[in-house]
Image (tube, rainbow, N blue to C red; front, side, top):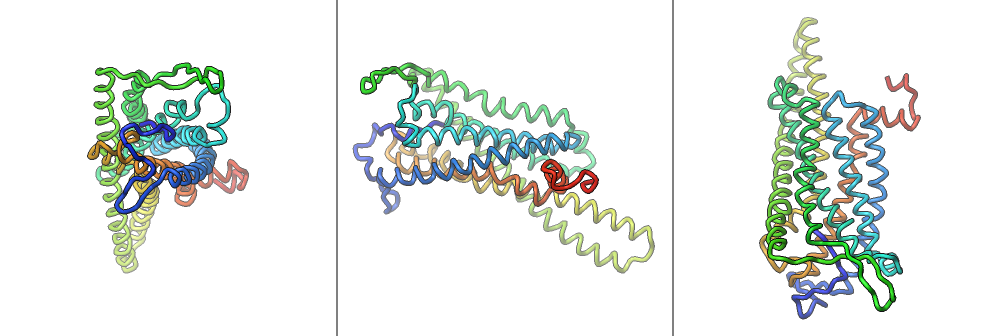
Length: 362
């Protein structure tokens, strides 16, 4: 999906005000909202670049003996790339930058190097999150068999396959959107821009890709994360009830062996519960922040006029801006979840920044 808010709508006679359930979004109001959200998104994206760079360094330091570290590292890499692309895309539509006499047209170039690519990377993030949630569900359902199925090799294969399946097929948009040199009489200069190539084959190809990769894939990933998160929340509640009942029974049990077994089971349960809580938190934040994207995809599929060049252009742009902002939030806050819920992550981070000595961490 690409976005160029400066391109005029060709299908609407009056785009200065569009009705949205009794409310009106004028071009002037949209411009103010655009600047406000873009500025906030840029700030969050800069924070996301910093936090995800730290996450990558910490997970590399922790190693990959646990497959969960591999998945979380991939998630951090995806979030880092997404925030960089978002930062670039929002910068290109900033008036001070887009109005400068650059050797390219920022608002056009951003479509292929910013907005479009960031949406592709977001699909990868969605499926990595779905895989992390699904893996944790398997650890609960089949704890004895999951280590045979989810090995470092299989995890690597899945994490490599995800970007291939989610991103590579949509790279074909560059067959339709081409970089071209454009002459600007007002500046008396030739600059790099973008031209849309329209042929019956490319039009049909784009429609099929939008349905499969722009609608079905993201929604399936969202539903997968939703189902897995609900299952994990139910597990957390049952685990909490189980610990309370076992604590009550353990206090009445005599004998060292029974007490030791009880303590061992309780410790294992608490360790598993911490991981489940971490995964649940990541998945919940992702779902909340990914909801605007899901709504946008559904509206585009149901209402043909809901597009950049349709009757509801301003509403589309507004929802797109909200989704970009939400994605920036999702890609920036994971470090706080890791630090608060992951003991090994917290120790490695503190050691990396020399807050603790190596002996105290051990």
